[in-house]
Length: 234
Image (cartoon, rainbow, N blue to C red; front, side, top):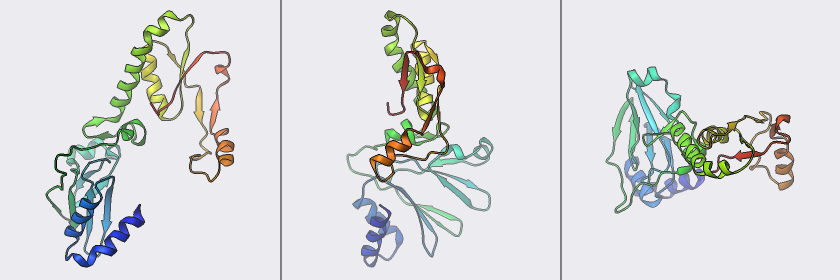
């Protein structure tokens, strides 16, 4: 993706005298999905696509210092109280030159609404972050609880009490709230092996299967129990 963006700039730069107009053409050509910080000889440019697919925030601090992040949770409560936390608008171009911030009029699509990535709430973002004024932890708690409420009648008719177990890490967020909704016990019986990285990026199925078998540590107390397994890919 990054190579494609650089190639576009190199191919079209001679048609423009300013970075702003080049970025406008880029945003009209590629409608989504990106939040970019571009360093040039003259300063920085920050853009967010017209559909607002990914989150992007900034905090202005003293001495004309700006911090940009897709995760709002990196900012402390003390920082936010003393400085305004701002979400970059969809289709907005921001230039930062010598500490001076200039915003362009957002590039918007005609007759098109914004299209935020649902998976940011489900999986990508840390649970203490927010996106379009929705806190990720609130979203996950609500989804898990609603699923639990929907399943409660089913388990009221069943004999025995199954245990709710989440697949770490994000699956535990949903599993806890699901357990509350369905009125069953939640147990953190699966722990992620910190020595195993992401397995889906490995080169072959053989490597993925081998690593996947070592990715989680299972508590012996799971044996003989009826388990409701909750993953994050709801």
